[in-house]
Image (cartoon, rainbow, N blue to C red; front, top):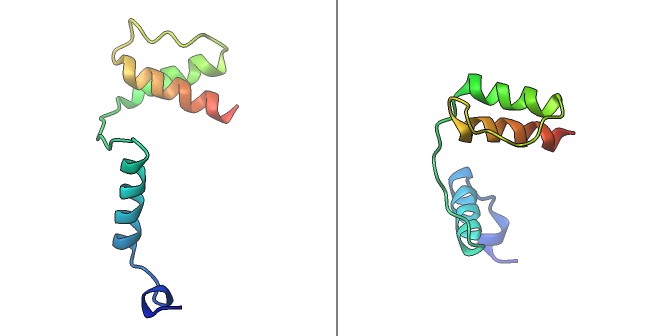
Length: 74
């Protein structure tokens, strides 16, 4: 084992390596603002068995994220 392998990596180093692996896999990092109330509406719709139809909500992306997150739990 080399000295580099023996020393634990810092959180910053692990994060950098993770981001590199994700980029290599074709992912892109994007910051996204989520409207919490609309996200909760999407979650509730998923619990109620409603389809993924965020159109007409205050923020369709937030609604869809809530719906998808809730469906992921089920």
